[in-house]
Amino acid sequence: MSGDQELERALKLLGPLECRLMRAVWSGSVRPPFTVRDIRKVTPKLAYTTLMTTLSRLAEKGILSQERVPGQRAFEYRAAGSAAEFLAAASREQANRMLEQFGDAALAAFAAQLDELTREQRERLRKAAGHE
Image (tube, rainbow, N blue to C red; front, top):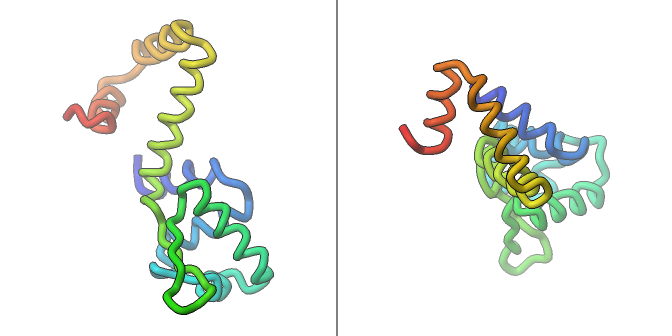
């Protein structure tokens, strides 16, 4: 999967405003560390308080890291990981939820999907799982 595809899939997991902000962060439109003022330059129509709240929520979710600017009330933010890393973590979380909810039935469904994979898909899966 290309970096653009991973970015788009990761962004689909977020709300509309979170998506706009993380697209700016993951695409490099804002450089880390950044503040609310920095991200406001690429989203000028959004209120400062709206951006501040949304960035704080993204930090609470672990998508951004947040650190107070020394001697100020402001925070600096950075992506906690790449779009690909976020997508991988979110997929593990979803798989765990499915296993908790459906147990062996989920494993059987995953196994059935594995049987349908092409050789190329199996190879990409091995690499994604770290079993090159």
